[in-house]
Length: 404
Image (tube, rainbow, N blue to C red):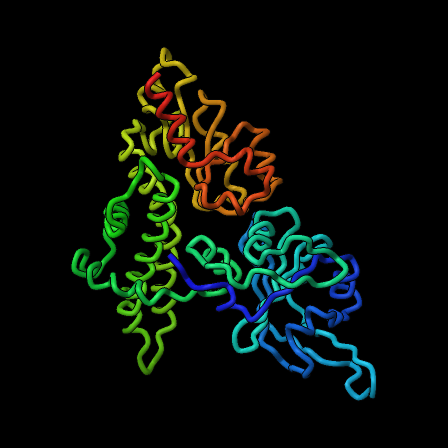
């Protein structure tokens, strides 16, 4: 699903790798300013701009993003000098900058209506890799700001997820509303079971070539279900929130409703991905068991060819395959290592773009193969791409073992 181009959300963006002097200036001397070098001046122009609303964010893989809000001011400190200029960008104290360390990536983007987004991503994290990919920030250093080179990037559902992680709400495509009446007719005024919604979403795509293009079909199903879910969710939220938005705002009612919607959204994503993978395996005639216990409380997402074969001590270990499934992985990938003790070489499928090299090196060391739709390979480094496994490659692997 296409949510427009990156340039529709930002008027421009620049980035730098934080140096020690940047951190010292912010956290010790309380200078709270960046020198207005050329790329910043190209972004803000020559006129002073006071009190721009600013969102600050710090991104790390091991925790939820830290958000803070304040203001930035762009000004020429030598405005009255007849020949010299000295532009600076002033910002207020904020929690995100307080978390930043030398080596972290800093991105400053100008949002619509002269609102500023300043985000920091921990060095070596997947968050940093994804932000670098989204804004095309190769070659960013400490000496100055580097402009983004990717304003024409199309925003897919996967890229939209990254934007939302930094507090940017994506615009729903107008065509998405065309599906609402059909969903109301089929499901009424409540969400159906996850498997039913996944099957319906896939059906709206017409005939899917799971054999010839499993990578493309999996991404298409994910993006279509993500879009339909958002359309239906918005419709139901408008209905559920209406009683609390009268002349006397019921804050508690609004909070209860929105928290319930947030929890539903959070729990749905993983289940939907598992449903889509099941559709893939069923369409290709691949035998599997989903969400079955192997040892104790260990319950892998998928065991091939079956859980009965896994528990049969006479069944050859070389023909067993285990697959974990996570739309996003962060540091949760290590959970897969403790599942299915009989299988030493494990697999994890994800829709996460630009996973950090630190993570993929650790995965390879722990004999975990990362399975990624081929369309996302470009978000990884050349060295990573040689090691990645596509969805089609994984299907062929389990099919070959199934017929041995």
